[in-house]
Image 1 (tube, one colour):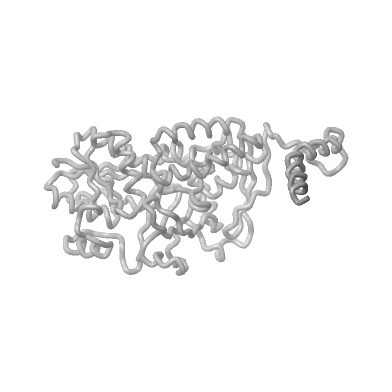
Image 2: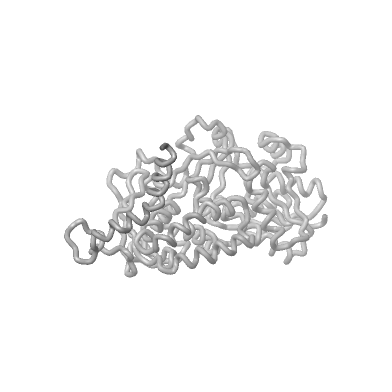
Length: 400
C-alpha cells in the first residue's frame, strides 16, 4: 500500500485515522474533505491534516451539487426514514464517496479509507458507493482493523501523538454537519431517556426562546423543486441557506429519535434540520392540490422504500435509478406556492395555490352548486358495497 485517499473531516476519528494509516501502512495519505456547508468547521482542516502527516489535502466545494443532485431528489420523494429522519447524513455520503474515488483515480492511489465505525451505517454507504464506481478498489476501514476499541481509546491515542481533537468533556458527543442539517449521537445521548442538553443545538433556537410572533413565508415550486422564497428566485444553495436561517430563528426542525441502523441495532440520533423541515412541509402542501389522487397514493407507497435505500447506502443501485425516474414523472405537475407560518418550533401550512390546481371550489363547496349531482353518490356507494353485502348475506345464511 503506497498511497491512500482518506475521507477526512478533521473530527476525532479521521484525525486519529490519518496518523494511524501512516504509522501502520508506512504509506502516503491524501486527505479529502468535501465542503457540504460545514461552515467554520473547515477553517483549519487543511492545517490539521498537514500537521497530522497528510501529503496533500483536497478541500472541494460540493455544496451546489449536494443540494441540487441529492437534497432536492430526496425532497421530491418526500423521503423520511422511520417517520422522523430527513436523511441529512445519509444523502451526503454517496456524494463524498464518489468524489473520493475520482480523486483516487487522479492520484493513482492504491486504496481509499473512511472513518466509519463497524457498528454504523456510514461504512455501508461509503463502501457500496466505492464499489459501484470502482469494483476493484482496495478499502481500508480502520475501525474494523485496529485494536482501538472506543472513542475513549481514540482520545488517548490522540493525546499520545499530539493530535488536536474536537471532543472534550464539555462536548461529550459527536456531530456531523452539512448545509441540510446537523446530527448528534454518542456520549451523553446514548441514554435515550436523557434530554439533549440545550447548549448542544447549533442551527436552531430553543422554541421557548423563539420570537413571540409568527413568521410567514411563501415557497414557490416548479416540477416539485423549490425555486423561490417570498417571490425571490435563488440558487439551490442560497435558498436552503435562507430557509435554515428563517427556520432556525423560529426553533423549527429539531428531531430526537431512536432509529434502526442497517446493521441491526437501534441507535439514538438528535437532528436539526430547519430548512429541510420547511421544504418538506411546503412540498407536501403544493402536492396536495396538484397531484392526482391515485398517482399520489402510488408514490406514497414508494416513499418508505426510497428512504430506506438512501439510509442503507444504495444511492447508485439499479432499483434507485428506477425510483428516481418514477418519482420525477410524478412531479411534472407539482407547480405552485405554499404559504407557511413558523412559530416556536412549529411549521404550519396556512395556504397553497397553483396555476394547475386540481382543487375546484365549485366541486368542493358545501353551499349550493350546479356541477355535482349528490344523487350520483348513491349508486357509487351501492356498487362499492356489493361485495360487502354478498359477504354479509353469506355469513347470515351460514348461521341458519
